[in-house]
Amino acid sequence: MLRDRIARVRPHWNDAMPGHHAVLGMHAFGLEETGDYTQAERTGRRSIELQPRDTWAWHAVAHVHEMRNAPKEGIAWLEPNAAHWSCDSFFAVHNWWHLALFKLEQDRHDEVLAMYDATIGGPGSGVVLDMIDQSALLWRLALRGVDVGGRWQALAERWAPHAAAGNYAFNDMHAMMVSPAPGAVSSLSSCAKHSTWCPLARATTAPSRPTWARLRCARCRRSWLATTRHPSRCCGRSARTRTASAAATRSAMCST
Image (tube, rainbow, N blue to C red):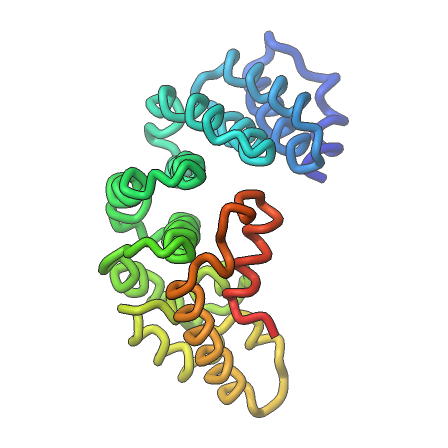
């Protein structure tokens, strides 16, 4: 859908038509997600040539650099051009997050924390799309043994109003990244009381749902402590690829 639906309409568009850049930007992301990195980069760059503020095209090419494990190129793509993709853009935080991930790959932890404070989590956005990136970045830092200070608690407070929603597993999992973190104990307690905040809890229909939730939270906390005390267990140098990092995160996120 991401690739072929847009590919079918591309022959009906050309550069003289307003909005062509948006079609190219969307297609670039579909190409990247299906593994055609060369064509994705070419298409995304063409979109930017037509409209330098096409945030989705900047994002698509950033994904290409991520999948190629090319943090240097990713930084060169995003950082000098931040004025184009970050001004008055709903997607700004997410692209800042991608830039932070590239720097994280280079072990530039202090810079990543500074970016978090300035552009990702520090401004205090309570938009769920932004909080997902905030959770994901703090989690990655913690897996590397980086002390993130009181940032967890501040983020937990922003997630709290969404505790009873439980209608989108992807969001719930990112909320749960916060729950077992040191400094977010109140959220952990809320999770145990209100199982709808626990990812996958709503998928269970047995009367023991609250008990299941408490066990899940306890398992999360044990895994959290293990991974942050011994980050080499799940995020060593070999975990620099997306596959290995995903495996580490799945392990830390209480796999049963």
